[in-house]
Length: 447
Image (cartoon, rainbow, N blue to C red; front, side, top):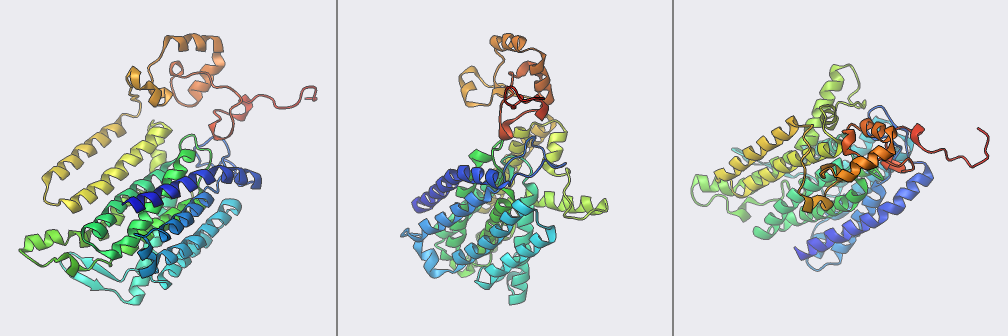
């Protein structure tokens, strides 16, 4: 565990430190597309955050290769090299798309080729454990098709959900954490070496997302772009593919004891079929709904719109930050609920806790205008909108004049809860229209 945590921390540190220079590089190269109709941010924001995330991936693999307890992953398996090859290809296509806006079919072809590159190097589904049937061996063609389909679906699911600041990185980080715990349990608890590559991939993926999130939380200073969303989607799919079909039932001693005991023992074999789907359940549901919606309206399935789940949360009145947190909540509930069930499937408490948390989630969805207030002693740790209104604010707003009230109402929050926003804020933190900015022309310049 110490080596995994060291790899995670190094990956997060490299990603975090590189994101700032990458942001300057994106601005210098003009990788700042204009605001589109489906976008929710107000100012052009640089992309290419995937560059920092890719170098974080390379650093994580390099560090793991030099650690004593993780070096065997590279010696006994070719899967890390397969992952790096496929990730490099999909990352390069993503960088070109962030800069030049490639066609959707070109990106789809690149996703399939990246999956094929990983399959050629051994990262593929060999067999499937199916409840009630047993272990079903797959032919080479079947394994290749299933692997490519899983990679393409996961990449596009993550790409589709990347619509709010910090949403995709946070949800994938939650998914990677659940998958890391599951893979580590198989590797350490059952001494199954085949689960070590997937555990390593999940740890590195967590580091990439955690290192990028401070720059990407609302208001975002940089976006990961397709170079980042497709990259983390591919790594998440590779983790699922690596562990699915690699668990040996004989090692788990499934068929000892009664039928009920054998079924309970077989859960670690069956869960890999379900866990990847539950981890990306929210992005996958968004993907399916988007395809159905666009096809029903006579549009291309790849045509962008504002009908995603996170857009719906904004439409019913939730703020940007709260919409992201709600998506985090449901992703964590589904992923960790499934993980807990795989450990204690006979415990009724797990089901009751999941039902209780689901009820809380539904209440949060129905109260978009409710803004909780924190105690006085905790106000320094939360955003200003969750703090109690002080007497000094009203006097400050009275001195600021009606312009501050107009800015407050423009962002959808009560004017009495907002402080005046200076006109000189920059980048993604700007609020309101460009006409509110100060005139930057030099003194004496004719109008």
